[in-house]
Length: 276
Image (tube, rainbow, N blue to C red; front, top):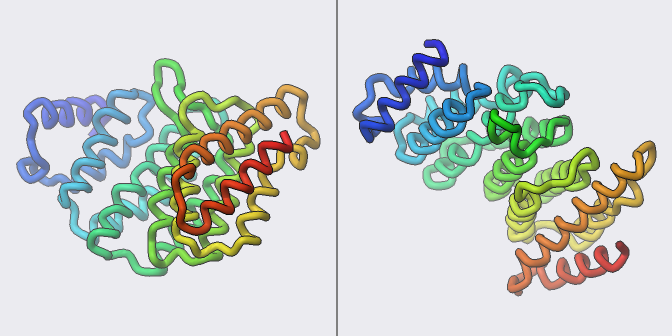
């Protein structure tokens, strides 16, 4: 099915307010949606394909086997790593909307577990690798709509961190993968990236599996002065601003949290901000 035919089909489904159970062969249609998940058309990609996926996954339309297959596709080289390393090209949409399928699938797994430990480990490996290698951090890309890689990936981290299979070492790796995006120097984030990343960090900290030294070392890794080599004054300024805004956002997100480790985390944030 080409993009135009898929757009018409999904518009018909939405306008008729049809539930997936009233649609013939929803999984077959889902496979066509996966083929066009990175369409540069924001209506098709965001309003139709993503909204349909999120709705149908939440409604339990797909079997566990079908969800597993969709998950594998989202994580593969043709989706999550399609054109990885490119900047300013349309390939970003395939990557960022593939990663955005992880939260609804992981949410289903929390309600009725069907993913094995090995599945979660694969998600963890692919997601952390993606965070470290994604170079296109545009938020809103003119007429083509949201790209939003840092925010979408952070949403996936937030859901993955809740898995009981995510233990101390894995959570620490998620934190360090987020560091790559927090310490971005090519742009100043203006599309709530700081909020989405902070929510992921709070979820990791709420697991209360990290040691105090883990958390202290992570805050040290956010120090912009350690990441200035080879960067222009503008890049250094942008990096510093992104880190400072993130720390302020994280502080506000945990200001009323009294459970461990949050009192200590608040102190670490204030110490980090005083150094700036």
